[in-house]
Length: 115
Image 1: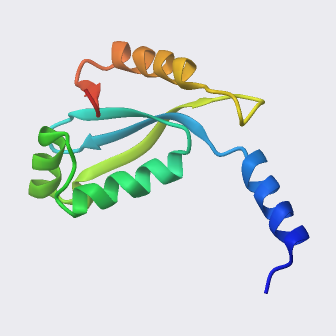
Image 2: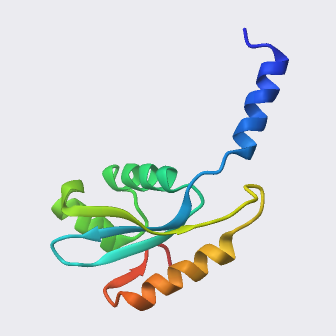
């Protein structure tokens, strides 16, 4: 059984971890369409979005249609921009949305993954 001191240490480490934050892209290689999202943890967003798409439960109907037709291998998943930050406790939503807007302005075939 884990002692209380060790539990507190692990919780503190988790709270102070600095996951990669940024703009993620799901690009259909066949059509060139890209779906951009903001991520406070890029790995977690890729995993959860892939899971929703594989379970046929993603709210973005166009992305889901393309995923159903081309499969995961028909997509290029990437991190377009990484946010540099110091405080993992701070809310970085506005900065992430500004980065996504930059990416959307640079790619006319890109749209938001969520409305």
